[in-house]
Length: 176
Ligand SMILES: [Zn+2]
Image (cartoon, rainbow, N blue to C red; front, side, top):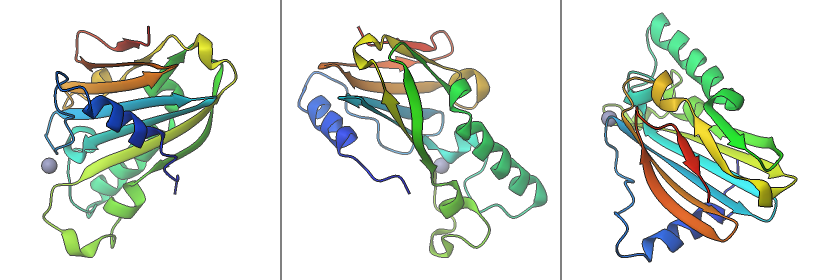
């Protein structure tokens, strides 16, 4: 499992101190997801948190063959970081990635929470050779997953920070 480096915690703290910013949409809401991006030095961390319904199409443990196939497919999709998250500039390479799919959705996992809503979490850690040249990122999450209608993005890059919401009319974030 990818250890939390503290970068994202720092970002959450920084954003939370801005009273005029909308509250971080951390609650489980179908149709919505959050993407958190933080850079410190040459380390870049991205966290995706989404209601499982948006990406997987169900929120229980996979039972049927079709659900198991969907799990396997989603795991591959989230592993395909080049397609899901296209970083612009920075010369960043993926170092580590992790999702909670195996822990939460495989048959036999997490027996005590059946019936509850569940989130998909994906964590990515990059090493950026030239972090000062990082300009932004583009994501295909909204076009790839039609059940996902809005993606709230919070970022902290090179001492700058911002928050915005992507939807079907916008798929890119500028860190400037
Ligand atoms: Zn749900």
